[in-house]
Image 1 (cartoon, helix red, strand yellow):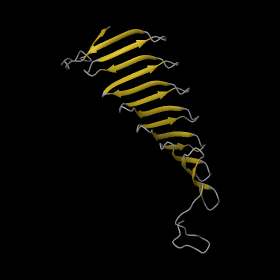
Image 2 (tube, rainbow, N blue to C red):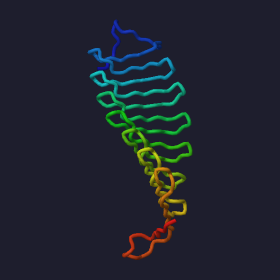
Image 3 (cartoon, rainbow, N blue to C red):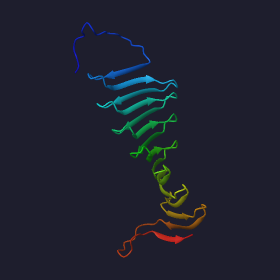
Image 4 (cartoon, rainbow, N blue to C red):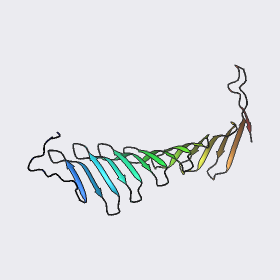
Length: 193
């Protein structure tokens, strides 16, 4: 509860110099903290009523802002940060803290979404490079095995590769105007390469 008046036991200061600042509730449970660690990273943390850290806002020693959100057990489940090159990144983790979803913009502005397996290896990647969509499906070792790309001219290309990365099948389609036919599901014509 906020007070309007300062009592004799309280001190009013224009400046406080400390290595760590703790904010506690009336029962003494830490609810917020702010400090600078030995590496120069500035951290502000918010805690729930039980004292479990739930939110952490950091500024790395290099000046990169990072926001982490934790579940009730303290496991980091979401992280948003801005890299020094200006590219934003968002990561979502499962209940064990494994990073399973990554969304980011690359330095050239390409938006990407990557879904990872339990070992945190990207298995499905969706990207929009130069306004051209593409999908890559990877095997358990991280090798691309299915690639679907819509090229700049609107034509599609599907490529399948084996475990060694060799193309085993590829097909392209030519983009064209839609035909007025109800017996054809699409105006795209697929041909093997």
